[in-house]
Length: 387
Image 1: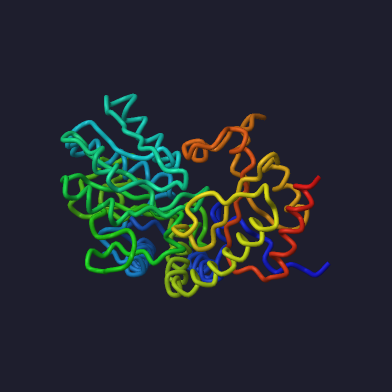
Image 2 (image 1 turned 60 degrees about the vertical axis):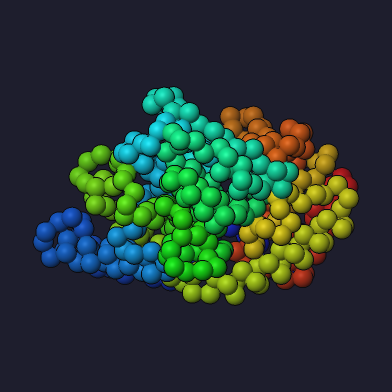
């Protein structure tokens, strides 16, 4: 069989490490880096490298260096984005989010509910996973302290109307956070209030991004946060990151993070177009060739390299295993934990039955697929579905 060029189709879980990121990390290792908080020459050198990385990320994402707070990844950044404003300067004890957010957002909101007497409104979504901007505005109350809606969903790829939502929320005087971890490496993202046509829009107060979705290393992320937004730290200690996040910064991972962000954003528009072409070809071949297959998420408003399906009457896990044996690494919408298959909360929130939700399969592309690779994917899927 002809050797496959691109068998890794799980970029939404983690993107392959970019060469630029690897090179930046090796430079830090070779320099014998010190602690950025130390006052000696090695510490000063480390601090310079840290601030250089901060500036690179800020410039690439339309922020200022002062607006970049480094964290250990997207989960910590989401915790800081939710808990920080709610505990520092609460307008009230009410938070608005959606039923399909990442667990780090939902569990942070529920933590506030359990321990600080907050009330959480989890908004419903349509069958395509879209959130109506008016429903967000209608959910805002006089005691709402924060709205958190993700820019794009990891499982179904649906992109939300964040700019419209943010404008509606801003008119009510409420702060807005968006988890952009899944979208930042695929869409032209800017935190700059003056830049038109870029996500997430100038009315957003905080944005979460993560290194490994750009092709950087695991263990690094950032919260882009407006300087007017007060944050109560989630981690207490030495007061690093201007008091927002204590702990010695992971300089090695941050250097790779910055290099990956710079390389990714340099051609994000062109890359998105090529991924969309592969995605659309894959969707067309799968849905027309297999009557049991159905695309999940919004047909047009979705991430460029994201194709997700349910296959009525077929286990998503069995399709995943069959594709893996053929050299394609994908992911299933059903999560296996402690020997139990749990249907995806996202698909259930979209109105799917538990049985159908457990047939989910997701393809997320790091690079465009060739027609031969798409043909092979369809062949493997058809064989397993027929079996």
